[in-house]
Image (cartoon, rainbow, N blue to C red; front, side, top):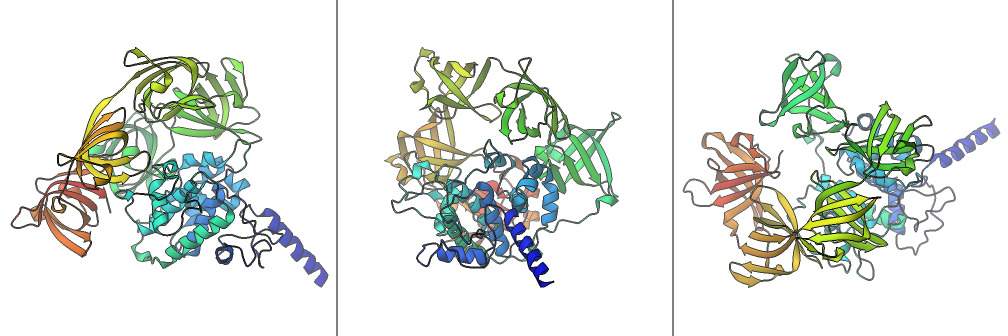
Length: 631
């Protein structure tokens, strides 16, 4: 009997080892390839004890092996879990909410070890759904994560608990390769640098596009764990959304006819053609394609299901991720081995991914074709059965694209250009070396095109053969919120419409501060600026110093409704101060530029206030209040 038990234990052990993923298996002894002299030994053993990383069946850790994007997301999730930050998270609920997304990429079947981590990352905005397509190579194997990418993932995850404002910082890196750190990644890399989680190599390079290995990942997550472990969360202060039993709610289904954002209402037409108006409350849960959304994400013609309580109050609305198959194009094709995943995009930039099977009919220009022959931008109509494609009819033809040039033409292997179209999507186009180019009415070369030019590009046989370009001269003004110094200097301003925009400065930009000649290093956050821009390059800056008394950034602690006034808490160098602010004549708006009223202000809102300290009763009189973050 003892022999039988030993055999069973051995079989169970071997089976468990075979089913584990590339992150490794739980080791019960020291790793043979991580000796006492290994620089990462402390971090590896620490994170193994926290069940964040683990070894392999042969007792190795393989510290030099690269980490995949999927493994990085999983390690981040396990780090957060090890730090005790998931006690109030219902993972089963998240798995149900993102079930469609997870199954679309075969995560539950091929990478079950990562499904909780991916669902959590989607819910917490660490990861966007579209980014999952970049997690897999065309053959279905996993893509490695780069240092900049893992910094963004970890930075977002960490800041969910640190809650630092990453938008108003002057970012100056000391790395030799600073110019290769993207604007998107810069705030998160900066956060990790300040927290001593990442640094440069022996040559002072950050290497943003270099893969990170398992030893480097263990160090990053070990240091992040220490920070997370010190953050205390009061579970009673967590989001306490009212629980409700959907079985006790009535439901209405139909199609959205009108969205009235001014009073947060929608008009829905049911199957009988009857139209009804529904009020969307502040606490109404809105789900689109299983993800949380806002009322401004609701669109006409979307199919919608409303859940109402006994008082006919809308508690929840659900909208499928709609896609118009009458005006769609191929966005992406992924070879998953036994089938393909095809992503379609319509004119409203809605995307939806379906899978093929052996019976899927695909025609390209009226001829039977394979999925790998389809190209991004091909016009398509399709029919589906559930999540499976039944018929895909594709037509490729000469196309004319209009948009803004995202950068100068790149000459790498072949000339190529990127355009941002009117619906804000980015299109990459290959350019014929003999393409006809005219700029501002004159014959030019490809090298004469400048980022920000308005482009009309004619494409034949998948190559741009004709380009008509026009430069754009424009002005903008506002308050500086961020300055990034490098070979390409950039500033971000909050303009007078309440919209944040980032601009690249021309190498010979002319700068004046209070009518005196100045350098980029003389500019400061909160300075008022007027910009002259040519094709998205700032050529002239007129700046005005702003005294601290003319603006303040803080959190509302009290609303004085009788006086149309507020009290805000401001953190200053010498401590915390409270100021009373008169807001009766102030323009109030969100950072996206949407107008708001005094009654829309709430305690705990973070606001940016412009005005003067000229009142005898109040500390400050506001001319403009911008709601940076609502409670």
